[in-house]
Length: 550
Image 1 (spheres, one colour):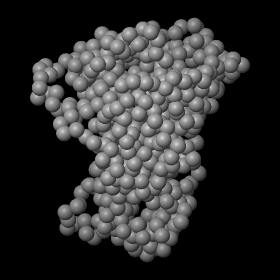
Image 2 (cartoon, one colour; image 1 turned 60 degrees about the vertical axis):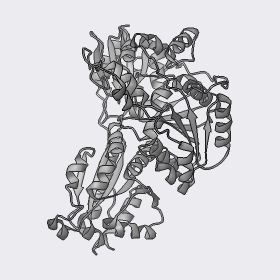
Image 3 (cartoon, one colour; image 1 turned 120 degrees about the horizontal axis):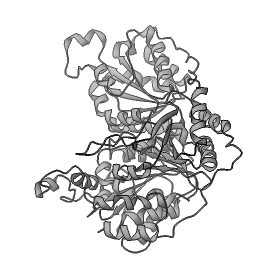
Image 4 (tube, helix red, strand yellow; image 1 turned 60 degrees about the horizontal axis):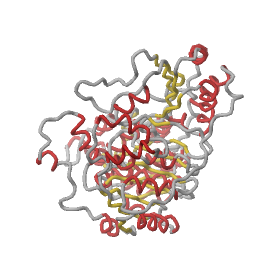
């Protein structure tokens, strides 16, 4: 075998059987080898950021890595933003990055670059394969590194001559590394903390947001009144009717401080201690309240489910039934379309076992409230904050779970970063409903302009946050890439469009023309707005929203 053929078989044998590609000349032997390995599904993308974001979404739902095929350092660089999101979400990805032939490197050709330096920004494991004979062993080590625990991005750099030369020998994936053991002393300490009766919360992330872990956490909450919190942008959270409800930490530090206020114990389970997303003048970056002790029940390297089960057993909480979310849906909205009404319609119509990819930004702030009691579903979020993730992640999720409906929610600005993902959806005939909130602005930045206390905020400054001139036409953009699209300006029109899209196979796009959800926002209202984030709107919350919305 030549190197590329042996590498292809090695990857497929190791369970890496989807490759999101944007190849170039250096990768042609890998491309040709696809014809000889029927287990490998190759998915072409028009931009490297789509390939890396799709690999992220695939791994989140499949619980195993996909590969990307990228062209040299420039191609890898184009995909860095969504690899950053994957790194922050501890998502397993194996990048195969083509390079010039080893003898060609010294000529410093036009596309020559230091690929390893580019890769290290997002990869904990990086290696340039030095020979065809070593290539497949390098590959299985890359897969093993990506699988963790914890999951991570691994980058294997493949020189063209290593790919085309004879002498490749497939290698076998070594046994998976076991998670680090749970510390009994930590379990004893946390048992004492819970029995003390002092206010405590479990902050859940990663695998702790899957059903078995959620039920164990729910037993602890029912037994000791522990508050259940999730990371602000969880990698994947299972939620809906029949599961314990978990409240996500708010993006805005002002709201997060209200959620955490009064706690004496914050227990981390596969999660990081909460910090402010950005620094703000005169405000603390560390969101842990004064006098609160932070404990780690399970680190990223440990088994979150086993740790929660061990703690529940130690404090005899397993015999207590967790409080489960009751099935409840909002009514279908009517009247002029707003971001709130889009979220309400999704809550009213969400199919069972749906996958929501949430990059709605400010427009989706009420989505958790309206979908809390919907049928069971998964939510994938913007783990690293680098926008342009939503549409590509939906591609990967749809390929990982072809029998489940996928709904991608994107702001207009973020959708434009990786709009080419629509073409891949059409090519692969994926069941994805794309909902674009078109408020013709970077609405979140209008909020941040106030929060950072920037001086001026005049015409020139605000023009940098405005997307109205010229207006973006997502219907035409979508149709140009082969995805049927409609525009909705009323709640009734949106409901009709969503109903039709969910009933018709293949990808669809709905452009929801809405006003900004945060026009006129005053920071003094933020603590009160917290009440509406994770519960169905109450009269007080509705009164607040009338003040906030235009």
